[in-house]
Image: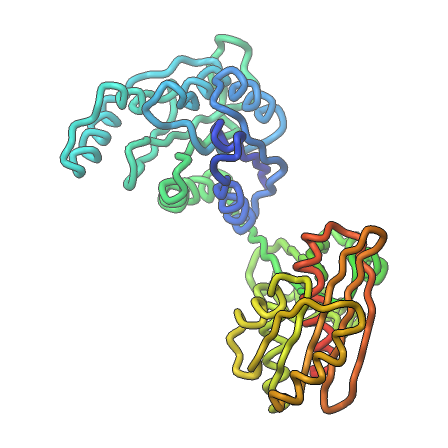
Length: 393
């Protein structure tokens, strides 16, 4: 199975002016092709540093994908950097210039002289059409790190240069790059990822329950912690969809047998959606009261757009005021279920008071929190919603 590295190019990314979404998109597509992604890196618009990064990657990987730096300005150095990395010059391609002229003419304009830079590619490169932009893309083959001045070699490895504009990158990737990689590397394996979503257990405790499964080689099992929740990522490689799905199902069943209701859903499942669906299934209506959380609890529940959620209130409360206030609101609204949470961030400790009232009884809890107060705005609502889920599920 081939390996890959992604290099995103652009000083604007390093300065925080734009967010790199290309790496995530490329990573998911490489995963689906069965290509192992080992590294990703971002480099500013400097040809020497880009070339150095590429030469380092050439020593250890089969496929290098760059995005960005293919525009017409002086600070678009990718073409020159890749040529420098593999020890060749750039060359002008008249056919690429014609494509650029045609693309620009669609806007009723003629290309400027500096746009001719975009018609240059490293010598011997395979040009790729960009049907939605003016930056031609290209593929350069390499065998190993070439001695200076000795050219590209046999071409066992591949450098693929794509635009930085996401829609252009995505188009060229699907139109040209994926078919090329499938043919060149005889890709006959697929990778499928399946997520189990859990709540009500910390990453450390969860790890102790499934540590032996995390040592598996195929499928692999990994953990990703969020505020009050932990995702379990299952990834399997195989020749067919059925083979991969069978492997994933076996591990999923084992995890579910160990964790029970700690698992609340899969993949894109949202905790609030699952919880409110369970409330509605019982025919109950829900009211909430929160304090110190900037409406984060009600916002999450309202996003679920479930009719069982009928009323929310945000009120500034003092310790021990939550329970009587919630009782009053529940009585006024005639709701079967009432959920309240109040967060207090003191100098010495941070605590969350939680109250849940259902036809089955009343529960109160006091939880201590040790993280940043801003993170509690996501942590506390998730804890409260999950306690409601466990009570009604």
